[in-house]
Image 1 (cartoon, helix red, strand yellow):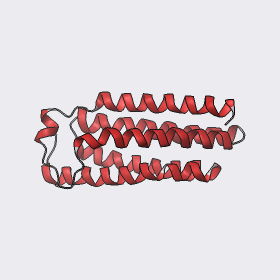
Image 2 (cartoon, helix red, strand yellow):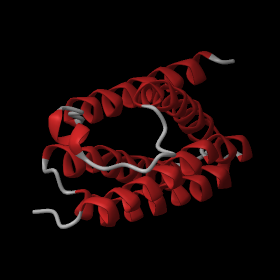
Image 3 (cartoon, one colour):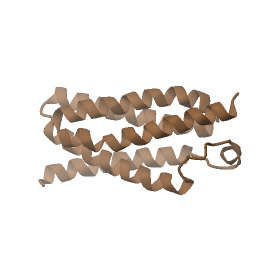
Image 4 (cartoon, helix red, strand yellow):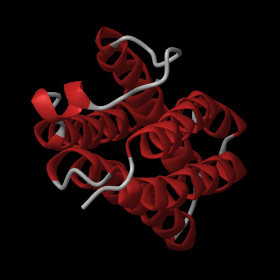
Length: 160
């Protein structure tokens, strides 16, 4: 590993921590969330933290690999764009679902989040195959979360 890669990885890790903290601040699993009907297959609440920690570590490594492999301003602009869009959508979901208490709106937003993860896989993967593959667990987890969001909407509607 070069010093440049370590600096890139450090910057990616810092960005991942910012996304995690922002999402965590917006996530309130209080009485409102506890009162929602949820499917029996919902992962236990304690699992979300460790899963997101692993996903964000993989995302930081993925971003650093793609950044180092992407030569030129055009490549790095594309990488930065998909990372910023995804980060905003990731944080926004928590705000919509938990703060606004609108799982129905969050269901629409999570579709955009899912597409942004697919874009991450394609864009980052075009510069580094490993970078693209490291994002696959994120896509799988958000796919599960999307279906969970869908079932919560079905089981608890209407909202608002």
